[in-house]
Length: 139
Image (cartoon, rainbow, N blue to C red; front, side):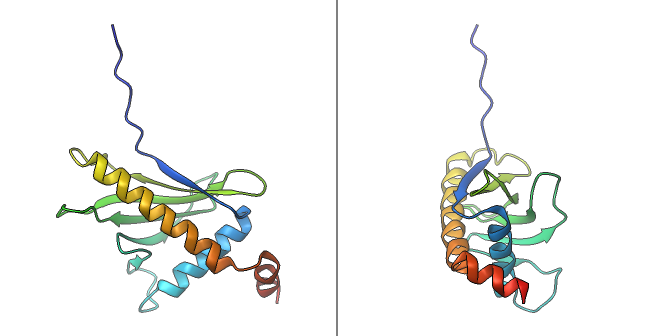
């Protein structure tokens, strides 16, 4: 008898930055996108994703709770965005739904993947040269 395989909802991308630099870049990106200076209002990180920082879970450097807008869908999907270490020189940016979006799986995966690609590129751009970023925080 065949056992049904669970559907993986976690989508992730590697960030070509060590965790400390990636976390600082995400902090910088959140600060740049914050509109009114209020820590309680959502931050529009991409056209499809708005989020707000929250306490990080053990094993993650940063965690944000947010909403991912899917094409042709009225209700956004509640998601968790997290940044964690992948190796000593790379990080992992991942997104998962709080509840699987029944009937919208393909749209979720496509939108989540595109959102992570955009965020990965933006983190690399925001971080600049690693040495400059480290010196900026040290001063």
